[in-house]
Image 1 (spheres, rainbow, N blue to C red):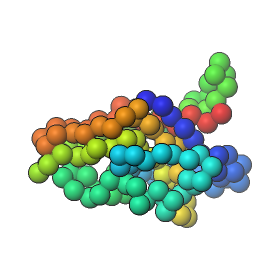
Image 2 (image 1 turned 180 degrees about the vertical axis):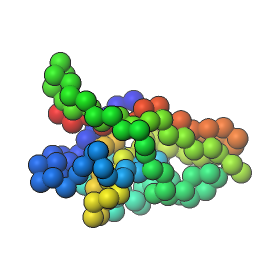
Image 3 (image 1 turned 180 degrees about the horizontal axis):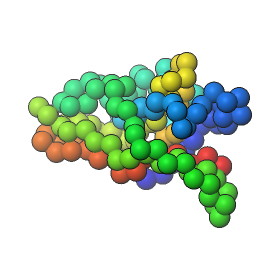
Image 4 (image 1 turned 120 degrees about the vertical axis):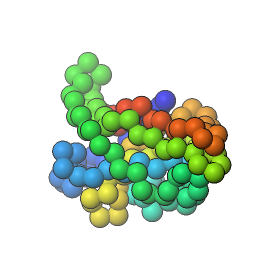
Length: 141
């Protein structure tokens, strides 16, 4: 899975608006055909029209992330922010197709986007199955 951070996150970090150790972060699934723009997609409102609809075990802007670990990677010259696995169970129909996931900071005004995970194609979870994103991660260079 490819990973991108929006350019706006650098400003938010420099102005101390985001606190990875204290803020609440949410993850959302994006519909098929969504293309992330690291320059234009700064906050939840910029992408909410492309979030999967609430249905079949998926609820819009409702999934909190937990278990955050922040590390410095001097080999690859970046900061890595990783959360624990996140799941949705498909009930009454499929979840998807989803092309990726976006992580937002729910503590800061306007819910800024902190990262995008590109699935590399559309993913659909059939009824009764579980969508799992293992260790969702944001890399900031």
